[in-house]
Image (tube, rainbow, N blue to C red):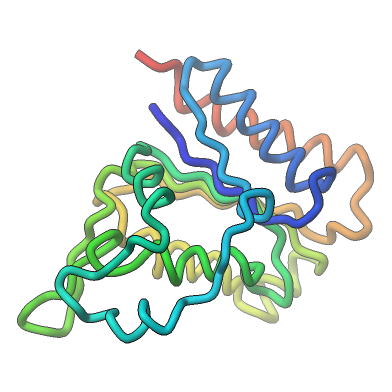
Length: 200
């Protein structure tokens, strides 16, 4: 399989970058290929432009502003998202990635009859999210209702292939996590990716 790994963290020496390294090594060890899209390093602009918004319902939608990224997404069999949760949500740059790249004609098409949308990212058979929170698990899940998981599972994954393999692994209470807990999280990610099996 060929994976697009999207990293959304401004610091190159962050734990998120370490997670991206772990995921890349685990996949490549199984013979898979990984295209690493570091949104900050590649200076991705998360702002939906005026032209993009005005033409959102045009057919065809003009995606030239993100054309190279669309090509990379279209070439992938799996999508891996690596990011911290800030204020119980995506970093702004990752939200902008969804706003600009998961657009009409790319992630979905509008049903001419209205009401529902038709998925187009049927090439994406696996969607994994590896994330961290500054809050303990019980605040993220019980108090806040795990909003990032809900958005990914119910709002983003449905654009992908039917029955997409969705997984989200979170390291909670990151600000107080010991080195042992961080290593255990990395090991858990590697084990999960090893389940995909070697590339045929």
